[in-house]
Length: 151
View 1 (cartoon, rainbow, N blue to C red):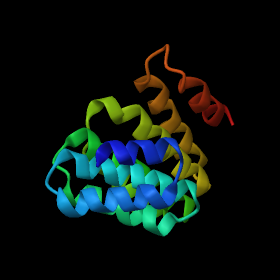
View 2 (view 1 turned 180 degrees about the horizontal axis):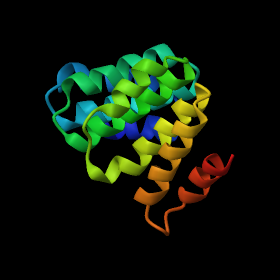
View 3 (view 1 turned 45 degrees about the horizontal axis):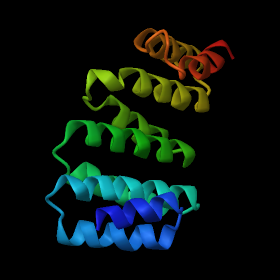
């Protein structure tokens, strides 16, 4: 089933992604595959303009996964959706959640985006500065953070 989901994802077939992910989540909810399926489904829904379904999938992951990296990614993605919805308080709440150190730069960068969207320029700069300090010098994401940081 998971390979069917991957194939549908590569084909960008949102309906097949939704169906395959739904089956995996329904039949194998306690497995690591279910959380990964929900992440794939959330991405497909968001890309197709269905933020409501994307949010539901990400919230499911947050409520069900026991894998810290998957949980951290789901929180980060949901915070991005909430930012798009201008739900800044909820986005910041997710970004305040304890997460693995490897995600520090991504969380700080998104925090900067939330602060910038609220017009909190100094807080945004601080968050972008934190993101720059937490990213590896060779990271391709540094140039994007730097664009926000300088702006």
